[in-house]
Each structure stands twice: as C-alpha cells, then as structure tokens.
Length: 376
Length: 189
Figure 1 (cartoon, rainbow over the protein chains, first blue to last red):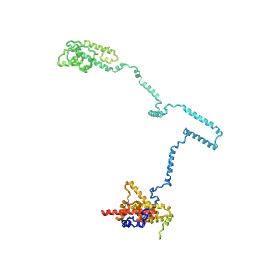
Figure 2: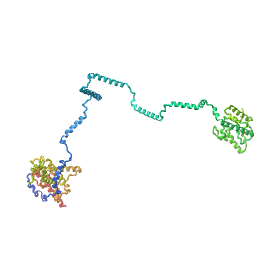
Figure 3: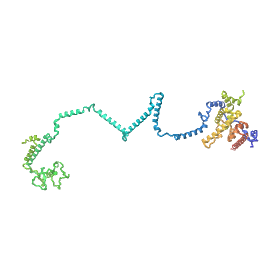
Figure 4: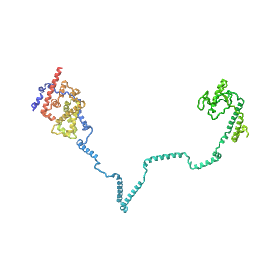
C-alpha cells in the first residue's frame, strides 16, 4: 500500500492544501492555435488519406510484397544453398572421355538415321536397302579411312605454312614489278627483236667495212703519219736553231762573261784551258730543268746550289748565277772556263745525222725531206 | 439535431457509403481534445500537428479492428499518447545523433514557440511542468488541465489508479517547489 491509496481524488484536487502556489496560478491555456486550424484539419486528413494510406509512411510511394520480411530469412537461406550448389554443379556430372570430340559425328549419324527413319515412314526405302546398309556403311568407312591415310602420306616441309604467306607476298611483289617493266616496252617489242638486231648489224657492216679491217692491226706509223707535219716543223726549228747557234759560236768563241757556256771546272781551276766538257745526259744534276727552272735548288737534294762551295759539282744554274756575279764585277772569274768549243766537223756531223734519220724514215717524213731540200 | 454517438459513427464508418462522413465527424469530435493532449506534451504546434495527423491516419487504418467493448474516446487517447511518447523518443534520438549531448528540450521549445500567449506566470508553470518526467507530465496534464478521471485515465494509459495518483501527487509537489524556488530567486534578485 502506498501513501496515495488513501488519498481521495478530492484530496488531490484540493491544491490549496498540497500546492498553494500552484493553486493560485489558475488553469488557463497559454497556447495558441493557428486560425482555422481545426476547421481545415478534417479536410487535410482526408487529403492525406486520398493521396495514399502510406503517404505519411517513411516508404513513401514504395510498396513491399506481402510477407516480404517474413519470408526473407527462408529466401536468403535458399539463395545460399543455391549459391553453394552452383559452385559444385559440375562435381557430380561426368562427361565420357572424348564426348565433345565425337559429338559432331554422332549428331551427323543421328541426322542420317533420322533421315532414314523419315524415309521409312514415307515408305521410300528401296527394296533391300536395309540388308545392304551395313555393307555400304562399312565401305564408306573404309573409303574415308583410306582417304585420310592418303592425305597423311604427303609430308609438308617443316615451317612451310609459316613462311607460305611471306612467299606469296614476295611473289606478288615480283609479279607487280614485272608487270611494271612490261608496261615500259612497246607492244610486240620482243617479237621481232632478233630480226631487227641482225638487220642493224648487217647495215653497220656495209657502212664501215675498212675500219673494221684496220681495227684488227694497229700501226705505230699511222699515228706519226697523221702528225707528220707537226714533227717536221719541230725538227726544222731545232735544226735551224742548232745551225744558228753553231754559226754564232764559231764566229766569237773566245769571249768570257755573258757566255752561257761557262761552267766551273771539275778541278776548280780557271784559266785559258778550253777543254770541252761533254755533259752527261744521264747526270741528273745537269738536267735541262735546272737551266731555266729552279735556279737555286739541287734537284736531288733540293738544297741551294748558289755559292755552295762544298758542292763542287757544276751545273747550269751555277753557271748562270755565277756569271751574273762576275758580270756585275766585270771581272772574269778564273774559276770558270769556256766549255762549248764545238769541233769543226760539228755541222757536217749534225747534217749527216739528220739526213741519215730522214733516210731511215723516208716514208713517214717525206714532207720534211722536201722542205729541207735534202737529196737522197 | 442530436449528435450521433460513437457507436453510431463506428457503424457508419464500416459502411462504405458513409465511411468518409463518419470519419470526418470523428475527427471533428476529438480533434481538439487530442490536439491539446498532444500539444501540452510537445509544446510546439508543428510537432503537434504531425502527431495528430498520424493519430487520425492510424485511426482510419485500425478502426475496422476496433473492439466495441472499449470506448472510442479511450482508444483514441491511447493511440495519441503512444504516438506522442514515440515522437519524443525519436526526437531525443535524432538530437543525440546530430548534436551529441544536446538533449531534446521541452524548455527550449517553450522559449521559441510563436504560439504561446501566456504571461510570465503561465510560462513559469509550463517550465515547471517541462522539468517533470514524461509519465508524470502526462498524468499531470491529463488530470490538471483536461480533468480526466483516474479511472478513464487508467484505461487510456493502462496504468493503475494508485500509480496515477502517485504520479500526479509527485508532479504537483515538484511543480510547487519549482515555482516557489523561482519566486524566491526573483524576490532576492
């Protein structure tokens, strides 16, 4: 029993006894309601219900199937079982070995049997067909096996099919190239090529028969005969100069100074010793190039020769330079002597030699012979 | 013209032709009582409106299964009370989720309500009521403002009359103390 069980409602209503402060406050309603709220509330509730009984529901617009949540555990359990079963769905099923390899053949056989059955139904089977069927099938099988064996007898080179494509492409490229070259040749060009070639050869033989014969033997004098006038002029010039030089020498050969014939004696002595010096054409130190060419160089050693007292070998260079020095001083150098004192029979010898040469080459130098007025 | 009884309205509601009219009359008959019953608990008008609409929609859905051995009035109050307590519980959970330790406060609602016209004394009383536990607050409001009998209240709340008396007694004591303390503070200040 609580202390309130003996309290009557009237006692509790007597707030002045239990709560005098609260009793003074009164029971006024301090809250306000928007104007027309209660008037509009029924229509508002009807509107909500007309939109849908679940309009205020949290699943607004969505509906669930009946007993969705009730059946969900059982459905999930079933789905789990199905998932496990799907993982092992192939475990209990075994396919005979080679089944899929032979499947096509089996289907073909079944199709053939089906066709035969259809024919049987249509009563189109020839008489005695089924009696001969086994033997015919055996024959077909044997022929097929034989065909396969024959095909297997041929051997393809290793890598043949790997390189086949590239070979074909290369051949096609070659054919295209050949087709392109044929396009550059006039049509029918090669048909009469041999005949045209032979005709041209014959024509050229007719036009140049002698040249072809001469081409077999080549004579050296032919070249000389063609240029005989040139050689003759050169020889005449040499001869005239030589004669003039001899005449000049014979007329005043005692002078020293300004005479290009002065050379240094081998023994270094000077004086009136007019001993002739015969130049050796094989002596390279006396090469004609040094006469007008490199005046200060030794052609062999490429060293200067002027005033080279150590080099006692005389040369035209030294002759010219030293002569100029001596000419400047206008004093004859006793180291130099006259060396070009020609013999009295020089002209006759030269002329005789020239005539002898011309006589020997009479055929080739006929014109020159006439020019110099020689007699045979 | 006499108003139809609740029994007559229930019969009209079961008839498809008179269902809407009967439903409208039921709403019109109990909307104010239910509204103030909810409003005194939630203080805020908009919250009260939401809960009241839910109460009538539930009535529409469950009225076919209503047993006539109970009064419609008692059944509607029970539905409204349960909806109100559920709403408060949800708001507390939402406030805790959003703002952590900030609790759903009836006092704050009272401070911000635009539809409160009471003076400082009335506001003080409402503040005192707001400090009560929900069950005591409910019993105090039903007894103090709505003047519902303990027997009817016992049916509505499915609680014994003695427990209701005790709740009411404790509620009155707390409110008296709250007002006295606040008056002392005001007089001292």
